Length: 182
Image (tube, rainbow, N blue to C red; front, side, top):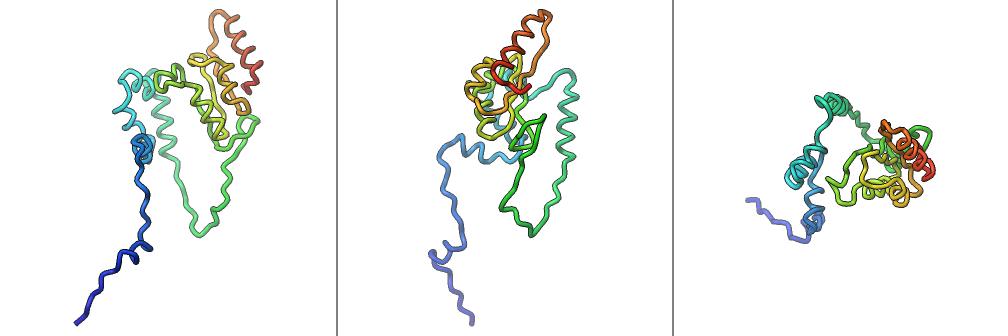
């Protein structure tokens, strides 16, 4: 007859790796998101409909949105096993300047619809991540405020050319004076 012995709890601890439970509900919710679709699902439940639809949608027939999504779906990762990944460099050059990652934060108008700090939060996050930040002409934060939040970062300005050209020229001059790259 075979006798079975159950492991002692102290023996099981070596095999199990318990994570400390996250008490911050926001962090727990966002920590469970594994994709952009997961984040959109969370946002849909917590954001007023008008703000969500503005952020989630795109212009015209949403053709550019569909193409962008398809482009990301077409990306395939080919993992290499047994490779040293202890040092990874994701930095690159974008438009003649450095970026820690091969992308930046795109311009979005009326950002405070989605987040109370608006572009201030986006510019600060971009600066912390070492990636470019783009301020929209329709942004809710001034050129100077973005520069103050992200003084060493790469700041870009998206210009909507207006019928009154002097307004457009003034915006370009302010962006240049603030040290914006583009």
